[in-house]
Image (tube, rainbow, N blue to C red; front, top):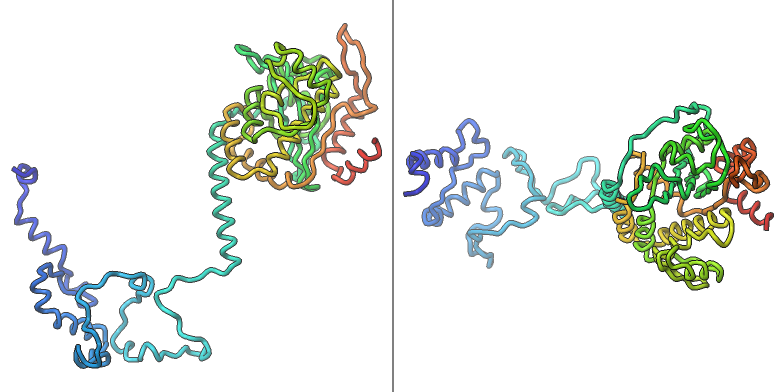
Amino acid sequence: MPRFENEGFNPEKRNRNRDIDRTVPEEENFYGYNPIDLNFNNRQKNENVVQDNQRRESGINPCDDFSHPYVNDIEPPQRFRSETVNDFFGYQSPQKPEQNKVDRHKKTHKNRPDKPPKKKGKLPRLSVGKSILVFILVLVLIIVGSVSVAMGRINYNEKQENKFVATDSLESSAMVKNILLLGVDARTGENAEQTRSDTMMLVSLDMKHHCIKMVSFLRDTWVYIPALEDEQRLNAACSSGGYQGVVDAIEYNFGIDIDGYAVVDFEMFKVLVDSLGGVEVDVTEAEAKEVTGHPYRYDHVTLDSGKYKLSGEQALAYCRIRKIDTDFVRTERQRTVMSAILTSAKHSSPFRLYNMAYKSAPYIETDMSKGELMSFVMQAAFCITGDMHQTMVPFEGSWDYATIRGNSVISINTEENKQMLTDYIYNKSSDDIKAEENTNE
C-alpha cells in the first residue's frame, strides 16, 4: 500500500489542489492567461485558436505577418520551440494594446534621431577599462581569500600593552609598520617563552620611502630589562618576560613603537625556504668548512663554498654559524638569508606564495590579529617592489666590548643608538642609505 494512503492521503483532494494551483483568480488575471492544459491531444486540436488568441491579446494583427500559413513559402509556425537567450534577456513587460500600434521596427528616439535602435536579446558589453578592473577585483578577492585560509592556521596570542613606557612617548608613523621577528632557539620539550631569543630582527615597512628595512639587535647588547628591573643581555628579556618582554625592552631602550611580534622556530624556517624552492646565498670556504666539519652541531648538514641555492636545512645551518667569527657577522648572515627569501618571494608566482604561507603558518606565533596581519601583507606587497636595506644595533662607533659582572658583553651608548635607529627607520630614504653605504666602502 502506498505511503501516502497509509497516512490518510486523499487523492481527490490532490486533484482539487492541482486545479486550484494552476488556475489564476479572475481578479489577478491581468494578461488573460488560461489554465495550463496538459492534454496534448486537445492542445493540438485547438492549436490555431490558441495562437490567434495570443496574437490578439498582445495587440498584433496576425495578418501583418501572413494571411495564410503557406503563402510566400513561409514555413508554418512550430508547435514547440526551445528557449534561447533572447527569451530571457530580450523580455519586456506586456504593454497596453494602444501602445503597441506603433511598428516596433520603425520606432523613433525622441530628441535623439541619430541614435540607432537598441538591439534586443544581447548582454551588455563592458569597456576594456571596466573589464580590467573587474579582473583585478576578482584576482584580489581570490588572493585575499587564499591568504585568509593560511592565516587561520597561525597561532594567535592576546596583545599586551607595554606597562613600562607610555605609548605616546614612542616614535611612530602611519607610513611605517614595525614588526619584531623573533627566532627562538627552543629545543624539544622546552618552553619557547622561557628560553633566550636567538634572533631579534625588526622588519620595518617604510611606505613613505617605498622600501623595507631590517635591523638586527645583537644578543649580547647590555641594556636595561624592564621585566627584570635590572640590566642584563638583551636576549635575556625573553626568558624573564616572554615574547612581550623583548618588545618591552626594545621599546624602553630605543624609543620606537613596535606594532607586533612574530615568533618562528627552526622547523618553520626550513619549511619557509623549501616552499620557495630554496634561496641563493654566497657561502665562503670558512662557512662551508664549519658546517660540514661539525655534523652533530649542524644536524649532519653539508655545505659547499660558492654561490648556489640552499635548501631549508642548509639555510638554517648557515644562519646558526657562530664559532668562526663574531655575533655581528652572524646576524649579517641571518639578514642575508632574509633578503634572499624576500627576493625569491618577489619573483614567485601567487600559487607558490600561497603554498609558502599555508605550509609555514602553523609554525608562526603572533600577537597581531588577522586584520592587522592582512594589512601588513598588503603593505609588504607594496614595499617589496622597492629596495631592501639592513643594519644592526648597536650602530658602528656607538659600542665597546666590556666585561660586566663577569660577563663578556657589548656596552653601548643607549641614547646615541636611540637617535640613530629612529633616524634610520623613519627619516632616511633608500638614496640616503645607499649614499652612506658607498661612503663606508
